[in-house]
Amino acid sequence: MRNEIEIVLTGIKPTGKVHVGNYIGAIKPALQIASAGTSTALYFIADYHGLTFIQNRSEFRDLSYGIAATWLALGLDPEKVIIYRQSDVPEIFELSWILSCLTPKGLMNRAHAYKAIADKNEQLGVEPDTGVNIGLFTYPVLMAADILLFQSDRVPVGKDQIQHIEIARDIAEAFNRNYGDTFKLPGYIVDEQTSVIPGLDGRKMSKSYANTIPLFESEGELKKLINKIKTDSTPPNEPKDPATSTIFLLYSEFASQEQIEQFRAKFREGISWGEAKQELFHVMNTYLEGPRKRYNELMAAPEQIDRILSEGAKKARAMAAPMLEKVKSRIGRYR
Ligand code: TRP
Image (tube, rainbow, N blue to C red):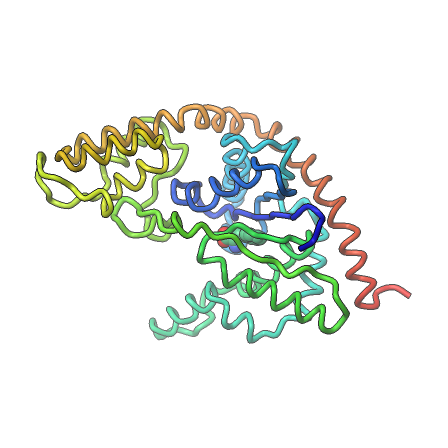
C-alpha cells in the first residue's frame, strides 16, 4: 500500500456522439469515483487518438467539444477533477516517442484494434495493412504515455480496453527494467455488471453496429429511438421476462430502486411493449433533461469549454513536466 492519494485517470476518444452505452459503461462509473473524492481524478479528451479515425476538420472539432461538454453537463466539477484535452499537453507526445523506442513492434501487431482490421483485410483478400495508418498501429503506445506520465494507479475502462492497459504495463516494465524503477504499473477498473449495454437491436450498443441511443438527442428523437428498440413477439397481457429485455435493462440504469421494482412487477403482470417503451422514455427523459439543457448551452458557447480545458491543461502539465524530466534524465538526455 502506498500512503499517497491514488491517481485515477481515464480518456474518451472523440470518434462518435456519446451514447447511452458509453455513459453507463464508462462515464457514470468514472463520475462516481470522482465524486467519492478519495482520489486525484484526471479525465481527458483523447483527441489525438480520435485523429487516427476522424480526419474531417469540423467533425473532429465538434466531437472533441462534445466529449468535454458531456462530462461537464453530467456534473463533473472542474474544481475537483482535472479535465483537459490531450493535445494541450505536449509532454504526452514526447513521452510517447520515448516509449515507442522501447516497444517491440510485435506487441503492436498483437494489439486487438489493429489485429481486427488486419484479420478482416485478410478475409477480404486484400493487403493486411489496407486502411491502417501508423497512428492507429501505435495507438497503444500513446495510450501508455497518457497513463504512465501521470503515474496512474487505476484506469476505469470498458472491457475492450483491458488489453491496452496490459500493454501499458508491459511498456512500463520494459522501461523500468532497462533504466531502473521509474513508472508505476497501472491497474484497471472495469464495471463487470454493466459492461454490456444492449443497443436498439439487442446486440452490444456500439457505434460500429449503428444501434446506439445518443445521450443528448432531442426529446422527440429520444422517443423515436426508444420506439425502435427490438422486442420479442410476446403479446400484450402476457408476462414478460425483465432479465432478457433491453427496455428493462436500460430502465434500471436511469430509475430509482423503487421504480425498478414496480417496473419488474408490471413485466410480470404483462405490460405491453408499447407501454413499457413509454415508461422507459419517461424515466430517461426526466433524468437527461437537465444535463441535455446544460450540454446544449455549453456547445453553443465553446469559449466556456476552452476556458475550462485550458485551466485543466495547466494543472495536468504541472504534474506531467517533472515526470517527463525524470524520464529524460533516466534515458541519458542530460549530462
Ligand atoms: N483507447 C480509449 C478508448 O478507446 C481511450 C483512451 C485513450 C484512454 N487514452 C486513454 C482510456 C488512457 C484510458 C486511459 O476508449
